[in-house]
Structures are given as C-alpha cells and as structure tokens.
Image 1 (cartoon, helix red, strand yellow):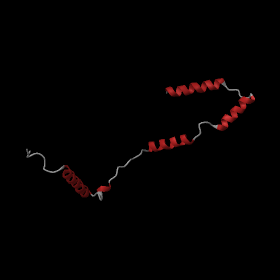
Image 2 (cartoon, rainbow, N blue to C red):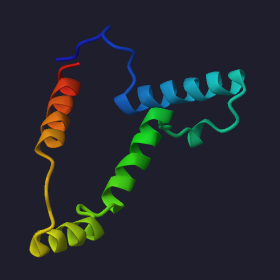
Image 3 (tube, rainbow, N blue to C red):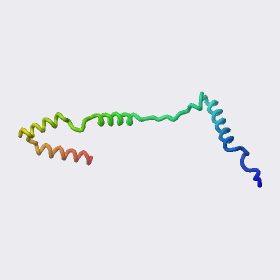
Length: 101
C-alpha cells in the first residue's frame, strides 16, 4: 500500500540539510562570517564577580584569630580576665536588633 500526497518527499536528513543550508545563507546575508564557529557565551554580572571575591576571601581567612585566642587564654589562666557583662549584653541586644531591621 502506498500513501501519496503527504509530506514533501524528502527524508529527515535531507530536510535538516536544507534547513541548515538556508540558515547559513541567511547568516551570510546578515554578515556573519563563519556561522559554524558560533559559540555560547556566558555573562557574569559585577555583583557575581564581587560575590566570588568575597567567597574566596572567606575561604582563605582562618576560622579563629590565633593571636586573640592565645592572649585571652593567657589572661584566663593568669586570673586577670574580667569580662564586662554589661558590654557583652549590650552587644548581644544590638546584634539581635540588627537582625530584626
């Protein structure tokens, strides 16, 4: 059984080939020199670049400040460490208020 009158009589490969040739012709008419070398491009915003610099700085910064820890440890062991409870409480409240703002 033969079905006539459907499609354009071209194979899928031939249809794709014709479409690509037409696209090349259109690109040439638009002044695209070599359409086969078109590549995807990625554009990174300035904010993203700054975020990347910040993240690298964080990664390269030590978790603890060894000099401050050593100084406070010596003060505690020597009995001269006297924390200011009022200043600590004020700082804690200030930080909480910043989170609510």
